[in-house]
Length: 426
Ligand code: SDX
Image (tube, rainbow, N blue to C red):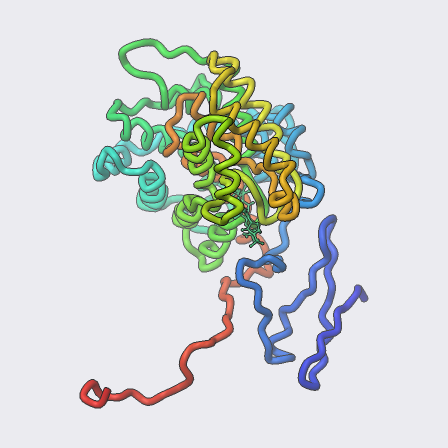
């Protein structure tokens, strides 16, 4: 018999099982609490709540550790590829050479979208935010790929996972091209995943497009850094949507909508805008004072789980230097502002006592801008990469025999019961 936690209230006493995972805090299993003690727990924002059991990603916020199926993020970023990380997240193990080549072939041969799908984009204004297009376009995939929406069929679950991973770059590139008024570019099967995406974004019919291996490697590494992150807001949205039995395309569209928020995936766009508003190193002290006066947040800083340096931010900072070097912007003034801002914030009591460190979004904006993307595309790239994490978590939930429809309760503080009064009596 494992440990138990004794809950006592109002003469009632309930022994609650304590469960221990591979690593991280133990959890108190409160599933029988309401039935036996007639009370709910209360945890808005889920700061102390484990919503599920998962084997995919582990984060130790105090140590700044991020593992995908046990492998540290810095080793995967350095030595793996995004598609190999996709296989790892979906299947739980690194692939053999033959498993990887079959997986890569499957993804490559699903990169095109239905020809009718391209007309979906025409309904948007050219100045539509690309994230608005992504929410609509990915949701619309349910209208095109009916043959992989039966969530109870493992074969169809895997096909929809392949379709989503394969088609997100094509759809994201179309959202970008549409906003630029440039023609859509078809994927090419001889290109790697990241190369294909960069070509679909930046090639034009007027000239040949040449891949830059440094930029391709940086793009692939940025996808790895954003692939999955435990039960964050958008992943929890995907799991909750999926718990009702909704099809995977609709669930991923819900995840994209949640990711768009400036406190979540929208922070990379906001962080670059913030660095642009600061403009120069000498204006940092005045800006930091504004953060301390609570006039605004320091975007790209702070995290619900990391109370230490986000390990992804370290890799992103190194990638930032590599990309700036490769495109000849090594003295980008915004990089100077970012590095000086980080130095000042990390030595300032206000940030230290709140354990605020740079997160994955702090350097990504400068890097993505140097790759040629406008700020409104940054969260689209985050969504493109996070799709594999969302679909792996969705698949894990569907395949969990104990999963039920998610239906939280509340503490009600509204009006007590009262009788209706006709309007002439009010
Ligand atoms: C992502 O969850 C994930 O894993 C997300 C993500 C992923 O990969 O999926 O990692 C991706 O979303 C990264 C986070 C990107 N967001 C930002 O950079 C936006 C700025 N950060 C904040 O909005 C904030 O830090 C959050 C939302 C990220 C975390 O907020 P919490 O955990 O709810 O913490 P909190 O708001 O309770 O903050 C604690 C204190 C508060 O001060 P006090 O009221 O206690 O005095 O720190 C302050 C906050 O006001 N604070 C900040 C701050 N973040 C927190 N003050 C200034 N600037 C900030 N950025």
